[in-house]
Amino acid sequence: MPDKPVLQDISLYAQPGQKIAFVGATGAGKTTITNLINRFYEIDRGQICYDGIEIGQIKKADLRRSLGIVLQDVNLFTGTVMENLRYGNPDASDEVCIQAAKLANAHNFIMMLPDGYQTVLQGDGGGLSQGQRQLISIARAAVTDPPVMILDEATSSIDTRTEALVQSGMDRLMEGRTVFVIAHRLSTIMNSDVIMVLDHGRIIERGTHESLLEKKGVYYHLYTGAFELE
Ligand SMILES: Nc1ncnc2c1ncn2[C@@H]1O[C@H](COP(=O)(O)OP(=O)(O)O)[C@@H](O)[C@H]1O
Ligand SMILES: [Mg+2]
Image (tube, rainbow, N blue to C red; front, side, top):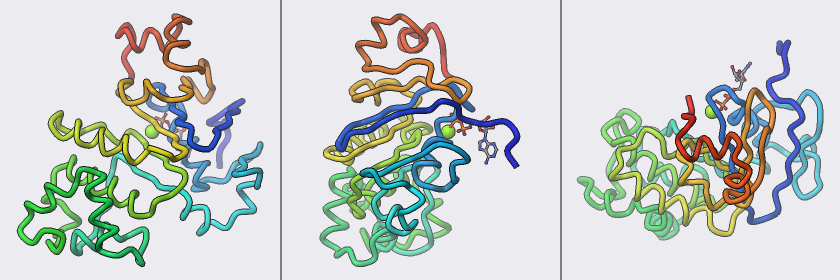
């Protein structure tokens, strides 16, 4: 049972198509916010609404269909690459999956696998690099084509060569969607509509990259390297 609230006084609003970013140290509450948005946790107090509808009134299946989630840990299963891509949308055609893989920058590496899209991923894709798993995860989200996306530190623990591919795939995935993004690398969130700086479960600063730099507060110090996250 929770004794001490993890989040306090969190109030935010996302317009359709906006990109909302969360930054802050480990334990600040970033993942908890996303877990509330996808209703993995229920809120104790307060309210979360989608299009004015209270989250509790929305069927979990409907909610999850509208939400794409890309996490740092990618869960792949033993099956073909194609089956893994289709995971969130069993009705998707091969063409849709391949288009999604192209958008995610996953197509090229998939084509180099022994059987391309029909390659069976053994041991949950353990033979793939972290970056390749991430590209599949982005492609998977693109297959489901959700209006809302949650990206939680999706580019950390990737080699720098793959990182650029992941980043550009992610940028394309975010286009035209409402996105909640958590990133350690501030370069990935600089272009957000709003950046929220979290500390101990509270929003301590919010604004655009430019306005937060002008403010010369915590974000400014993170950006200029005076503070480091973690
Ligand atoms: N399931 C849970 N039950 C209780 N406390 C949790 C749970 N998950 C996270 N916490 C606590 O909530 C706080 C925020 O965690 P989290 O949202 O994961 O932070 P962040 O993603 O910013 O690193 C931390 O103090 C963490 O220990
Ligand atoms: Mg987290």
